[in-house]
Picture 1 (cartoon, rainbow, N blue to C red):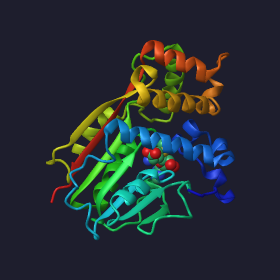
Picture 2: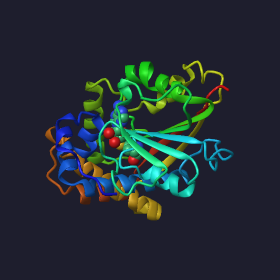
Picture 3: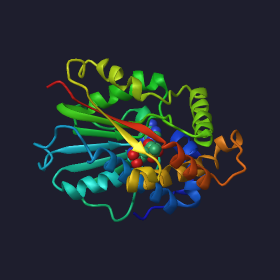
Picture 4: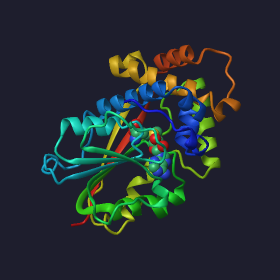
Length: 289
Ligand SMILES: C[S@@+](CC[C@H](N)C(=O)[O-])C[C@H]1O[C@@H](n2cnc3c(N)ncnc32)[C@H](O)[C@@H]1O
């Protein structure tokens, strides 16, 4: 996954997920660390849901003319794995930042830099399957309502499937340190008109789009466990989230939350003693034929 940030784009890192969860400085300084975190995040989501997608696309996933889009693809791990598991379709990954790989890209994947909020450079009815994961903090409520779902519906083919996967940004059984960090992040997001619990509105937002209004919106809700009480998945989940929290504290949230303890040790202890977890959600729906 060789890739480097172009210096010319250095000043344009404005999306919340990079500012909060990766802190711009961190990405430019250590892309390998960024990729490692994204890779582990991808693996954990796949393990929690026990697959890379839930949409009913098994009849088209082995066709050469099937077109699949991943929006906010980041380092491209979901796409790379899908393209290896199902090599016949063509895949497109878009991200507003050039974080995706530029070398050693499989021939059936194309990566492009675009901001969804500016409209996507695709004709109406282009894709058979559109996937979007973990962009919950990148759009304001108004943008979800007026741009995001409309744009996805526009470029999805009639009969195509759309799948949105997001965490519910709230620890369940969180200890004091975990709760302090998550509440500071929520305050930061709300100050930018972002609803950290937008997952609770995905169903109604999807149903408000005419081409989805008569379709069944399927919903899966899973536990994302943190800590050794939940075996290997919990150990890796706890490691991933405490590393993310450590990086969060290097960005703007670190100016609000000051800790005099080692964040990794403290969170590992808290996760184990409180049996902390959070929920992740997947919504999937077929566009009217
Ligand atoms: C938290 S990461 C998730 C990456 C990947 N989907 C995953 O699940 O590992 C969110 C990604 O969405 C991208 N992003 C945020 N806002 C975007 C927008 N308006 N248009 C395109 N990409 C966007 C960010 O640059 C970032 O790479």
